[in-house]
Length: 283
Image 1: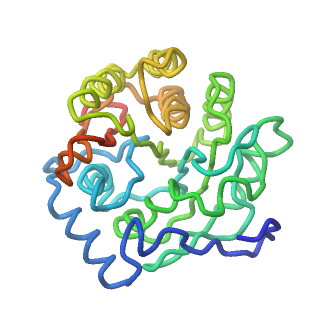
Image 2: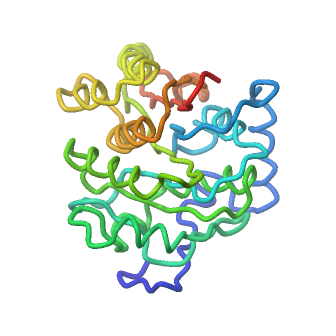
């Protein structure tokens, strides 16, 4: 992607054909199959305020992401905010994509320019810039699921170049400020432990999952800081959980937890995945 991005620019898919199919029909079919295989509550509860969902290739983490997005069938949101880590580029602060839309093989997701302006403003941490949005996959992989269940809803791609405690708390407060009085869905994009043996990954990830279940974002922050926990999107998870709490979420529900050893079979070096929902009342 070009270094300079104007307000009218479209961000093209970066990992189509790698993390998910590039063919539109095959991609739509794969997403629908994954959603159909998940069993949401019947009847569906009110839509959650926030989700955690993984961002690996669909072969590995699609079965974990699908239960989160299946909860959104029939829902309506003013904006979906996806908070993602930056895997390929370090930068200070938090970036919001400056262009007009993200494109996928199954459609485009328009960027909510008004919310972008409100969130960034003259903020010292959050800015509108291209860093973190070029080849980064951790926003992109959620979009085919969102397009399937919600259609082309306005969204805000937010990437954390620095996941420090200070920035997580700051972003959470700012998300609360711009979301009050609106029907907003927050999505934390993260995978869990990386390249551990199957048993060791389950041991580390179980602590992370327990803290999510207990709705304890600062416990997660402490674990990330002392390295007893691992998550590439740990900062986005903390920020989204804090913001969800500030917006009235009171309960956390674990939807799915597994790792690549469960989905692909090789248990010598795995990556962990989690999906969860945060709501005002239990799901």
